Amino acid sequence: MGKVDRNTHDMPVPDFAYTDRHDGRVFVRIIDSNGMYRKKTIGYMTVSNAGGERMIPNQYFIDKYRDLYMESYPDATVPFHEISIGMYALTLGITTNSGLYDDLVKVYGPIFANAILDYAMFSIMHRSSTTQIFETSMAREVLFEDKLHSDNWYSDFFSKKLNEDRHHQFRIKWVNRLKSKGLKKVWLAIDGSNNDCEARRTFLTKHGFPKSHNKNKTIVGYMYAVDASTGQPVTYFVYDGSVPDSQAFQKVATFLGSFDLEIEGVILDRGFAVENVFKTIEEHKWKYVIMLPSDTHGHVQMAREFGETIRWKSEYIIEDDALFGISGNKKLFGMHERRSDICLFYDGAGGSIRSIKLIKKIQAAVRKAKLAISQQTKAAIPQGLQKYITIDGEGSERKITVHYQEWDKSMASHGFFSLAVSEGIDPSRANRLYSMRNVSEIQYSILKSHEGGDVSRVHSTEGIYSKFATAFVSSLIRYEIETACQQLELDTNPMIQNMEQVILLYTAEAKYESVRNLTAEAKGLLGKFGIDQDTLERLAIKFNDRSKTDSRNPVRAIPESGTPVIRSNSHIHGKPAAKKERKDSDSSDEGAKKEKSKGGRPKGKKDSKPRKGRSDKGKSRGSYKKNKN
Image (cartoon, rainbow, N blue to C red; front, top):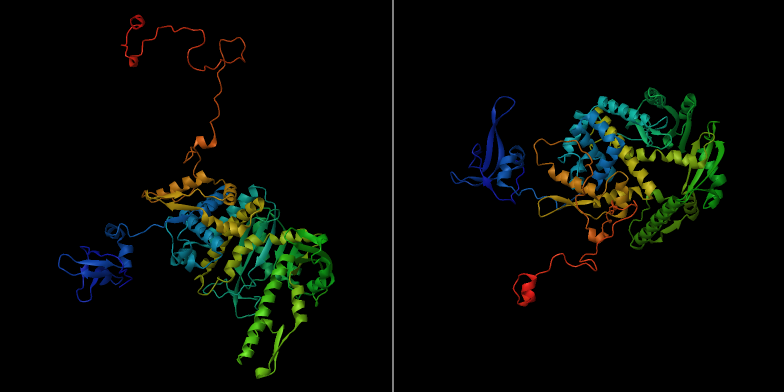
């Protein structure tokens, strides 16, 4: 019968509906695909008196007969007492100033562009690509779309409404825009081959070699390019996971070459630190920055030789956040003779945090094991901690042994990592180049755990293409946020969360108004993209007006500035600027000014006309002479 909310009052049964007095159903007759009439329940009858039937509607009636429902339940929808406009305003400012919104609208149309940006905001704010939580997560946000869409809508949107042809047109339009601004060189980054994926019904998911070494898993590969000078995302491509990296490189190289863009080098993660990848890079004569696994021969040798040299040594600081670095030339792999420059880094802050976490885990495991022995129960050590803790003996004679040398060895290794780099790249530049992949990788990495299976409900080729297209749009927006935060010396993630505090409040006038409570940090970040308090007031007005016309314009824009929505009180801020005094036109000196009158009669000057006597002193009004007598 459909979902029925029994916690609401009933309504009259519509004239076109039928009632079943046996089970209380209220239904309509509709024609099915076979041309046969069938019953469709629209509610549950509460009053069965002939001519006065009443019912409680179900969800089908609410959706299908919205106007009738609103006539009986005008107050059914209780508006949120407050909604957040911060992320919407920030995204609108970024996409407007960068030209991104204009490109999206031209390629996808305004409604699809708005839906893409809503999902991009969701991805940035909640670090998720799971469509099931979109509706609940974004319910209290001002969105680009007029309506909050469900997970089913987005699953259908990604798989059926969008396609790779449109995505490719957007790639072309965006690269052209960047090239017109001076883009000349890019660095490539590739990933995905280390990503287990169970997506089905698509040729993109083929057996490859994920980091888990489980060859039964299928994978999807992706590659993206960033501006060599700024790290701004430039373009991306998704490809069959079984395609060799050399072929994937060639596809992107051909595309970028059509814009006369030079590929300066490649930035790769640990999964690509293999001999074949280095051979491919040599063939293209590209520079490289590649993260080495912790067991790679080159990293082990560098850590052994220079680890204590740079650990907490101020001479080797390369970043303010306690990052130390040194370079050397070593043999990369034990089974190959290839040598390369290697930059060894020590992350003081990160290493300390990891060591503290290990200490807590080991101490907790020891306490738990001691308690189990004392209570004569089974004592088990977690598998990841068994090299640090062992239990010998039987029953109450069991003894716990902590292997402190292994413990110290692990803590001593925390914080160290190495990058294999081309000749001439020092540790500072190597760290900056590798960091250029962070903005893009943060958004793409969300798909690593949600690409397949029943998590994101994306199983088709077009669905996977569309998810990556949205991730690329998210990376463009996040890049602008991170760049602005760096200039303002603010932390990016906390500032993204702080945008939820920029709110609209539902008032007694049945509309939303901006709350003037911007923090200095929020004001600075929004101001970078032309959003101030008065703009928020105007955006609130536009938001309230969205539902007031049937011919709604789905294109969003920053309202033009003009007379302030709320005037400031001049008495609070001081007197207004004095008007310029007019020059005395009768004076021979052009710089002379008229003397400002102080009011009243000038000294030594008699009235031109005698004043009349005051009537409040008992004297009648009349001529001066009469009053004098």
